[in-house]
Length: 341
Ligand code: ADE
Ligand code: ZN
Image 1 (cartoon, helix red, strand yellow):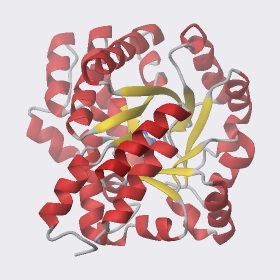
Image 2 (cartoon, rainbow, N blue to C red):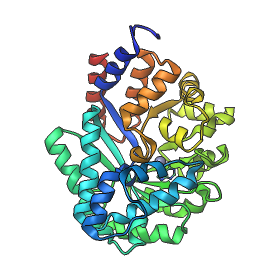
Image 3 (cartoon, rainbow, N blue to C red):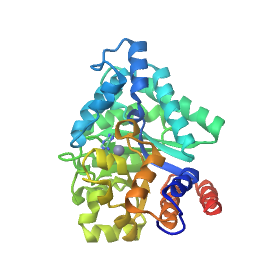
Image 4 (cartoon, helix red, strand yellow):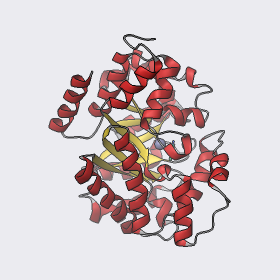
């Protein structure tokens, strides 16, 4: 065992108690099959599964697109403000149970407006649950609107227009969905407008796409964080640039395994990233589809790579230093990690 842990169980307990932030979580990807069935019944939406077990069995993916096809189909049961509230409340309860103290949540409004669900319905439900979690658990949050990159930039612009009345509740914009063939450059203008509105900027890059997409996200979109970023490791100059800038990477180990970004969790590049000085964090991405929430992600990668106490503390610290929390709040969480460790 790595430094100081007498057993795997002791390390698991250390992970469970570690104060953490989660920075890469698609709220629609936290839709558990049980809730999917309940909402399908509530809204009389047909779903092509006979049981929860059948849904889980369908979650076998060979790449990102395989997953996205089923992910967009799954979200069709989300219709009312209450549905979005219940989805978000269920995730926040799981995060709280994992000792997650702060979350930065993605949502995909175009996945809903394209089906005739109003933008306002989506955001009202999500933000009501976020406010409740803050009151009940002291769990703080930021909300990040993602543009679907397989759609046009004009559609992203229309989505940003729909968000304008809600800017007091939206902290940033992101870029997700099918990466290859949809480079960051396609969204340069809408990201510039979001930047002008004072929003934080993130983008999925280097999950399946080449390191050049990470460079575009930095140079053209001027992002504050990179979501995933795994393939940055193929470009040593890019690795040096990311390390020198202290730019946070929101890494998702179980997602990478389920989407075949890595063949084996033991081959996950998380330690390589840390050794290269990259500000990597551990996140769950779409926990219902990939088999685990934040602690399960820490656990899987810690066991496979035999991560040390110091490495786990670094990952948790990175989750707060890479967050969009105000300085005082961030420092308070870092002090709590230091006290724990
Ligand atoms: N949307 C939800 N999860 C995603 C992922 N891992 N990559 C790209 N788009 C996504
Ligand atoms: Zn993601």
